[in-house]
Length: 410
Image (cartoon, rainbow, N blue to C red; front, side, top):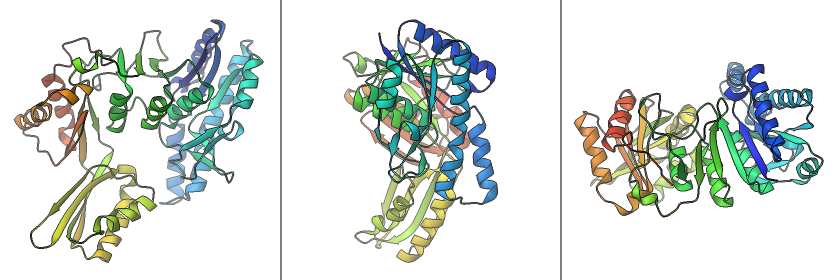
């Protein structure tokens, strides 16, 4: 008997009929002799409605109360799925995050899981119950409801799988695996059979919406095998697992893009020790993640600093930066929300040269200007004008022949 953790996203439980479909799939897994824990997101669109209500009340809602409200979406979907399974003759029990409990830190709307108490769940599994868990949410040590950020149900599922030492964590979504790029932009995109944790970490951080980055971090740390599948068919999906020896045969595994970032530039900052800390510490205290950073130092004792932040944090970030810029004597601040980050990813880059130059040349041939560049061992990212995003993805996908082979980035 295996222990299987399954996660179903908002589109998979978006209607009553789809919830019934999920119930049938869960029941089949149980009937095959497995213990089953199911992590469920809110029904599609529900979280957006709740966020809109909060923003209608005030521009900057209380972070604690925001989490109390947006956490309610999952309560509906877990109860509906439990009812459906019970009507089919199965023992099913739903749990909210605080009932397990899933213990997190106190970083509202971006909380990190610290610990999961598994005693209650294990007892219910022994009694033959199917366990339905609300994704995306937890509770801090002071008893406050917290949420894990958009896509946080993936993290809930992988964390549950790690805590329970599950045999596999199946992530069911509206796509049937992980592709070399977004098939909506490039119909020729290939589905990968396998991808390494490191490649998936890069792709998740660079804009791939299939898995949340923290879920992959958990999977890598605790060696949880993830199987990304579609909830609408029985096709095999993509395994996210440990790297193996065949990996370096694929130079570039995928092309990703992200339109959800904004760029902030601070001009003519006095070039003094500690000045970068003065700029970035207030952003860190506000729980705003800074991604790409470029610093240009001039010969006259001043420096320009450009960096990117999530677009959802842009208004808050630029307000903080403008205040800090005045304090340090910078000449001005400029923001730009019309950017996109386009990236290539592949562990084969570790042992092959010329990948970055090929990317730059490909973009140049299309007249696409590169504003910022960031690299790691297995990725190259470029910030460009957002209007060129689709073109950049298509030409890079073609340049690295991703549609012309059976991609197996293992």
